[in-house]
Length: 167
Image 1 (spheres, rainbow, N blue to C red):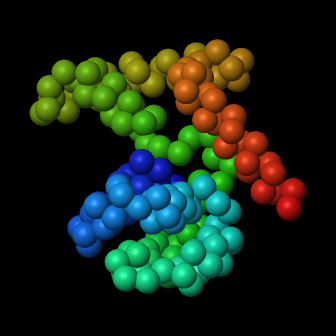
Image 2: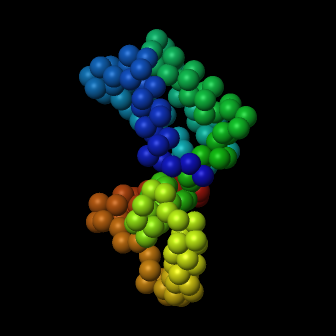
């Protein structure tokens, strides 16, 4: 699965590259449509194309150009279809855990080019803690703590998802 932050960043970078930045900042309707396009990944994969084409049907000018980019890069891409980047009902929508693991590993090793055997020893030592981590997770004690803002946003998003599922 992709990372929500990086997917939105890629789309927003393209939005600015084609010259829509000022329009996005100044025009509320354009900003609203762009936000819908940026958040398509929060919908069920099978609904994304139809929702996208409803949004695209009224697009003109630069907004149409942005939609064509999304269609080519995100909707009709053979390697990266909506099923690969839909985050519908997903609690984790970013790659922070993977980056945290990588940073832990870098800190553990302490150098950018460690001795191979030292590296193996450190990895083996760290792997011995997996049983403890699994036990903590099963008891819901080792889960990452969320900020109040993140908890509130997740609660709202979960409610929207449940409402969407019952339609």
